[in-house]
Length: 157
Image (cartoon, rainbow, N blue to C red; front, top):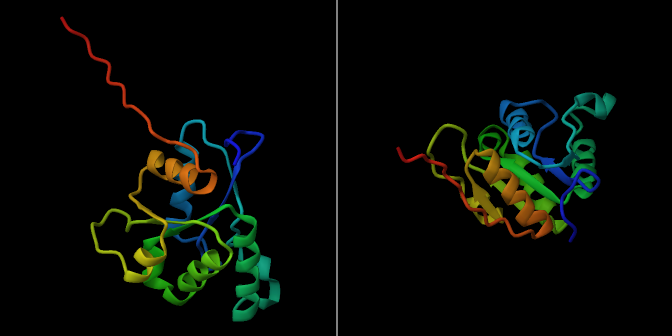
């Protein structure tokens, strides 16, 4: 696979149910703050995308399959699972069926055990941290080595 660059951004799908949930939006806040990280959002939670088919389960499944199919990696915030279990299960299984790696983000701001389904289907489970999210995407989507060293500057007087 090739390295992520401005000319070659990684294609990311973030789980959604055709509404902009806080966790959905938060993923992109974190990605935007990641240094030297380029991505293209393949997910589109805008209900207008479905037109008159909003609420039509089959139309929603077809559109979600299309969006996941364009992506290199799927990200599933655990917080969405609690409210929309059936739809998140569908997206997890769809990503797996399309051979897309799945990154699961733990519950935001709460230390809580993940549902078994998320643990079972997640290729990587991470905390909410922009560096961890960007590194997980690099590892899962492009198989890039992400070992980094933290450098701490200090001054001796």
